[in-house]
Image 1 (cartoon, rainbow, N blue to C red):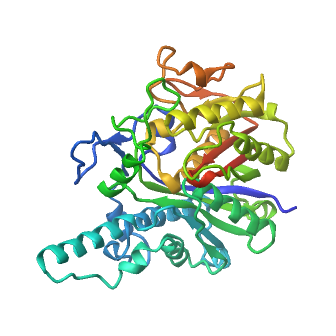
Image 2: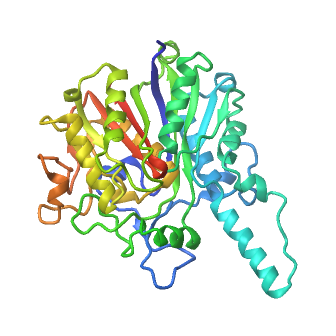
Length: 407
């Protein structure tokens, strides 16, 4: 079977990997909006994304794109530079798989506001002709292909908060099948606005206190975040022939569905367990060779506990280090799986395990820590890793586990 490696990473998110390792927190009060009656914080992109888009080759206009496409374009360009794929001919037949769970959420919200104003005041509703291209879920993937000049397969999978992980698996499968030698894969999301906040709050998924506290005894939900990550996946021999730096091998993946409840995980974590075991089986690795798991761990009372139960079932008494980078970034929804996969690859490559913020021995939920799970509380660890898992468990019961192996 053709093997797949990671040769480039681009991140446009609340925090880059060095900031994550340094224990910084990317959560802050939202700029430009507030939700009365709610203590909202978000993981927002701190860079001037619109200005960065204007600087991209090709004369891009941010006003004709939703912010989720801004983030995807910036991440894709950074991934291209990081991979060394500098010649247009190297990218001509590349696949592009860039996912999103919500698509152009801010464009949709603004259009709805214009329509409400029209109905209330009679003022003419003016809709941009770019509204549909801005809000469609595949906009990021299409725009990334145009930026790169990539004419290979192009798709934008939707699997809620596992969308980014699914994008990486689909891109890897395209390479294994021989449909492409190179793929730009990841996800983007821009949900930081009041409608999204109130929708998730209504479902009791959003933290009412604005805190992201995975595995904490006082955890009360997730914090919205925005951004994107794009990884360059490449057939291994193709990468070696061009002298590419190989960050890690995408050695295995497991995809399952709870088929249990539209938002609640399976209470026993049965199919989360199966996803991790499928990833291990595809990689041909035993559980004891995995040294780190980047947990899905959103900070919800039930979800974190079920994932911990699943980890104990898979790894038994030889538990890997586990951390939740959502404690620092918040939850990027459809982009979470891509951003966290990027962090996991960089953990394997740099031998640095990101910490889980906000935890102490007194604050840790003992039900999560049962069996001796170590959540890398407080500060990063330097550990030589052979392999690591990145987990994504989504609304709808979509489960994805990606196994990255040191090369």
